[in-house]
Image (tube, rainbow, N blue to C red; front, top):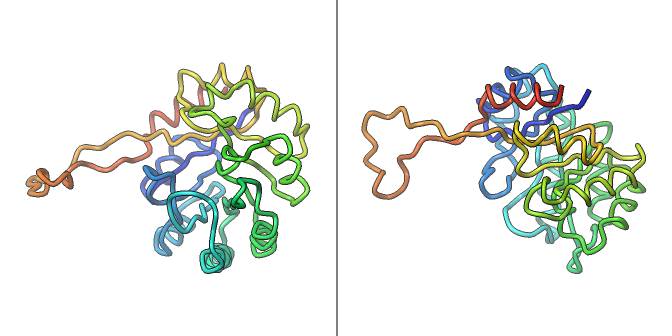
Amino acid sequence: MALLEIAANSVASAFAAQEGGAARVELCASLEEGGITPSHGTIALAREGLRIPLYILVRPRAGDFLYENAEIEVMLDDIAHCRELGCDGVVIGALTAEGEVDVEACTLFLRAAGDMGVTFHRAFDLVPDRQAALETLIELGFERVLTSGGMPSAVAGASTLARLVAQAGGRIVVMPGAGIEPGNVASLRQATRAREFHASAKRRLPSAMRRTPGDALGMGAGEMRTDVDTVRALVAALG
């Protein structure tokens, strides 16, 4: 049976993922920017209320994945914070100026994670040689890599994903993500032979405010949140 991880952008989204039958939550903030590290309160409340494994995205800012020393220190502190709160794992990644896996930074991250699980995120999709990068992640000790196969969506990158799954040979989990929906996840599973899948299953909720004076400024729209029914449909499609 395949496993579904949901990228949750809030505590409410995390709880919706659990209610819908997801097997794991990756908690983040600012999902529309690719995700950054969520707040202390968000992590703490999610950890308190979730029964399923909780992984935290550790990313200090949007943009690229070439980090300065101060940013790496921030990430190390955030990883330690996740350990203290009892999180099951973290999702991290760092690249060199040439776009290769930053072995030095990732070694520090893995050491800080201790016995937590560690996923390398979609920074992987920017590396020039994904086959070599996969071997690097295996050697470093990552348990999982999230990737779209270097394409805008996992469906578009299905052939590359299939090759990566075959190359991994059970040494690391290759988890397709990006653009995964109930209507395509079953065929993507068949095409790639992957056993874990990543989706946000989100939809925009209408604002509950009776008066939204910020509409003219673009600040009155409802929030994006993980949808329970979409999660259920994904789980059902994965069978």
